Length: 107
Image 1 (cartoon, rainbow, N blue to C red):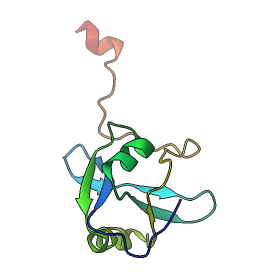
Image 2 (cartoon, helix red, strand yellow; image 1 turned 180 degrees about the vertical axis):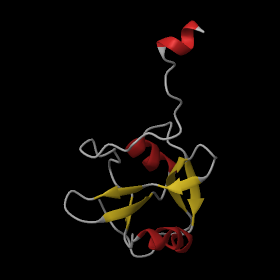
Image 3 (spheres, rainbow, N blue to C red; image 1 turned 30 degrees about the vertical axis):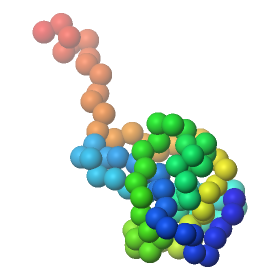
């Protein structure tokens, strides 16, 4: 992963969409170290690292930092080679309906 001081132009930032439609920039964790923001200088690089279905927005570095600093994230990785979920720390799933119980189905 390479970190640039001032990337040219707006960045392609992978995002997560909440059930309410709110977009949140994705963060990652380095193998040893704190969370970092993730951004790409081109759409092809984002898709190569995150897959074609990854949602994204364009933000300036300044705007991205403004969103990350309140989360305690002060570093941005530019053009990382791979962005993957941390399988050792699964994220709890929220806003998913519970499956119907046998009693509820019988009624």
